[in-house]
Length: 116
Image: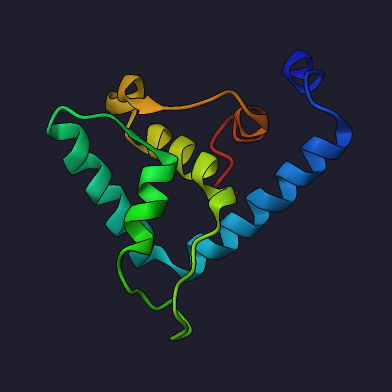
């Protein structure tokens, strides 16, 4: 793992950690929105198509959700890579059909980083 960390600068790792923390907060406040996107991704994959974190984010955006505080849900594009990795971790049977590009979250989420 230390070798993987050497690929990214300290600034990239720190920025990734901030985005991951922001996503954790978003997920805590928006479990219904995430679950909806997750279910849509499963349906897409079960129909034989591929999906991506961006597709899950766009699916969530197409619907109106409120967070746990009653505010409208917004989804940050920065979460797409995190959402894709969380989805693959939670649904490993679909891993080969979810589009992932290498990024800093591969390092930061080793061992299930979205729930810490």
